Length: 313
Ligand code: ASP
Image (cartoon, rainbow, N blue to C red; front, side, top):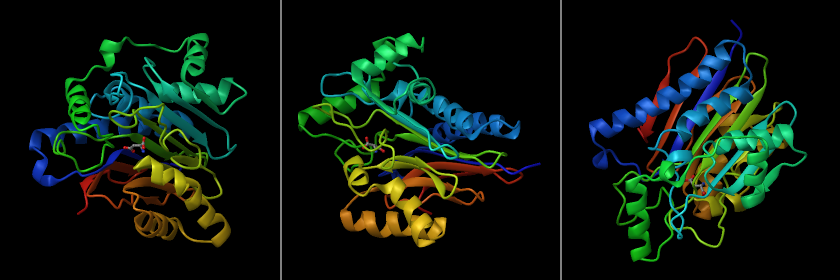
């Protein structure tokens, strides 16, 4: 059998063993396993990495545990505004959306932008109008209402703070992760990457993070790697994290591991940017680095054991 590989994340941040119950840990692990399985099914039957990335992310978007799709966090106005992006490594084609509401699966909208529009990045009402035209599935506000996410908003409003999933706050310990992402390599040797998020609780002014930005939160190039990030978006944008790793490989000849170590554990740390990423190169090497307390993550290579991790050790 030809080789394939896939990795996913469900957000990075202050994820401590001490604030986790066995039951909660099991639900996260099952959510990650299901998503990985959805991608693996496509890859093992010869499907494309792009379709596998979409399928894995849809599974995470449909799971209220994660801050994407159904479980997206609330904005200051009590809405769920979502961002997503996807990129294909053989063509360098990409699609992205930001600030979309009531779209059941923002990752599918990003893929549709890539495949059926002449653009890369659509925002807000325009993106939703495009979704309607393409007959994508919409869901009512109630579908996105998750009580625990709403409680997070009320608490964030009390202190007028804008809360990233992974920031230590007085409500840490409650489930606040996380943005989701997937990178995949198919049996045809093509890489793809995708990321989807609700952004941050109590966000205002149309704030956009790194997740929908090609080069910052998501990047894929068959010559180098596929990357999906999670963390404090403002820092990831300024450090152009995903593309930076690709550049270090392309122009400086670094290995995937060397490039990831440098960007996540040196550059971002110096900047003060907390978070992590999942990375995969065209040979099937996988790296899952993070500089936070934890990162929900899982990976699988053909004919190898599934890996699931949450904490640092
Ligand atoms: N990077 C995302 C953002 O800044 C948040 C996250 O990864 O948790 O919107």
